[in-house]
Image 1 (tube, rainbow, N blue to C red):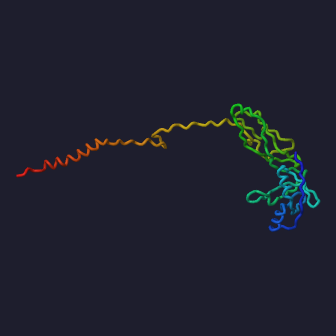
Image 2: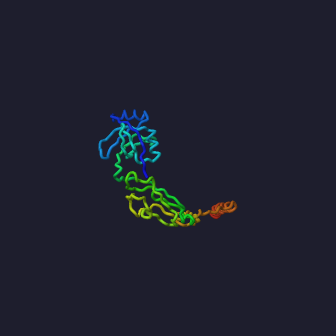
Image 3: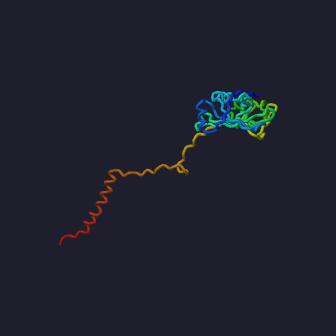
Length: 236
């Protein structure tokens, strides 16, 4: 279940780009706090290192201190730089602990499926679920047991049991994971000449031997000489 993470902040009156850059240079992130029963928007800054630590812990609910006054909120939107190396701005939204909220909760798959013994492998179809719950009852994650899954078995949202007080906001038929058979690699078929797309073997043209070539040239050369001999008349 969720718990709140403390985070200190400082109110600010400046809202221009130049001052925002100055805050970031000082190690503080410009931010705003809005929503809830008190719709007024508060402009503030938070310590960069403290906020990064909060993100690493995966804290959903924040117990923020604004000039000595505490408010429960959560991160609504983050704005990062072009290279996504650091946070440039944060939007915080107030949270009423007595009213349900909608959140994305990660899915964690555990166990050894029966289908593994048949060579199957786990194919994950969903990594998180959209749920509705009271803020303090939101689970950190949803554990999905896969031990009973056999080959070609698909596990759907309707097949798992969610914690009490948690309502799924997605289709009950949504596939979460499946055990798929191993992928068989087919050996390439041998190429057959004459088949479309497969070039036929080139035709080999025989070469005349040197003797045949000379005989051919001799025969061709003899014909005109013989003809000339026949046409030549004897001297009178």
